Amino acid sequence: MDVRDDTPHAPAPSSTVRDDTSPHVYRRLRTITVIATFGGLLFGYDTGVISGALPFMSLSPERGGLGLSPLTEGIVASSLVLGAACGALFGGRLSDRYGRKRAILGLALLFFIGALGTALAPDLTVLVLFRGLLGLAVGGASATVPVFIAELAPAEHRGRLVTQNELMIVTGQLVAYTSNAVIARTAGEGGVWRWMLGLATVPAVLLWLGMLFVPESPRWLASRGRFDDAARTLARIRDERVVDAEFAEIKSRVTADAHEPRAGWRSLGTPWLRRVVTFGFGLAALTQLTGVNSIMYFAPTILLDTGLGTQAALTATIANGVVAVLAVSTGMWLLGRFGRRPMLLTGQVGVTVSLLLIAFCFLVLPESAARSYLVLASMLSFLLFMQGCIATVFWLMLSEIFPLRLRGFAMGTAVFGTWMANFLVTLAFPPLIDAIGGTTFLIFAAINAATFVFYVRTVPETRGRSMEAIESHFRRQFAA
Figure 1: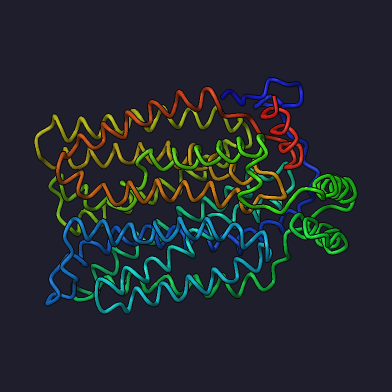
Figure 2: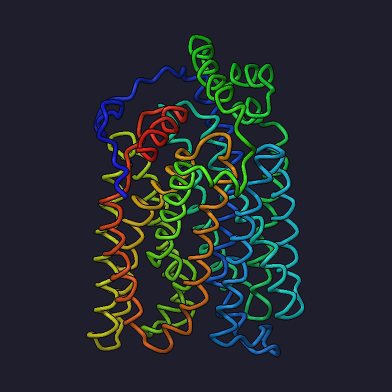
């Protein structure tokens, strides 16, 4: 299935995209984006915090832990991921039905309840249940926030604004790693993991309060026939000289789709829709099969296996968060100068080589401090390519490739693929690394090499196009 765009409608990846947005309007869009992406911050914190909490959960109950084994560690970590898969699947449909803004407000409440419940959990069962509930919020946010921002953003700024969500995700992970190290050093062993998990209640409250002042997506309003509301909202977030043309394009697309059935599984009976959703699902699943979350969730565990002590491993893990934030910031800059496709392919090459280096350190080098820091350096190299190229492009492309009338449903379905692949990796990694050690990373390297070949054949370029133009491209391309 080759979906590269060789038509004259596609701009060259290096072409300059015209900017019709005034500084005043752009500042307003940035403010809205920062508020909405607190959902991404919570996504990052709640997925990253478990890496530092697990070593303390593994302590005996007498020492404030839960006595976790490698298997139950995997269950605790993956329970959030499984919940996120369900949250993505249903969150996307709820955002189609009730609106992007209302969906995010509901997710903020789930974030708060889930974080508080995990922090106060008396035993493993309750912890897993609340981790699953927290996962519903994480999955819902991962499906809704990028779409919300993409629908608000003008084409020339969509890349930078949507990838702000990825920056907030890795910032949340950095905050988790840093707070884990600080809390572990200052609070002692007994129940320290509870403070780590409970800290997430603070950004959940900020997300809920901030979203009260954010407008609804004009594209969603138009899709519900509320054209006057859509026009008024668009006028708040665009310069006056471009409002009429963009609104006409949105209205034309909605009117053309008016006879089509509402978003749902029946929509996949249309061949081009089925193919674009399948493509998005594959892109989402393969991004997780890079093995990124084996490093993001279990970095201290990996470093402990190389011979580092617990406190040293937690402190060293902060470097993962710092590199991820720097990488995404760099990726956002690169997106303004290069296309989505070359960045994605470059990232695949980088993560494959990095995984081979990690495997080499485990399988060839003797246990020593030097090996520990070589593994850490290879992990940082992996994250540099993963977060700077792959993750930055992945979330952006998912937010822009799906048609308006089923955008929430399709995004939720694709992100479901992300979280299911994530769940499998998270559940399998602790027993796998325990059983075969560094060979685990060779398996990930082989998957990434195959993914590179798949991307060469399938990934299109979407830079510089309106979301309506991207939809028209896929209609032509997949109908051929």
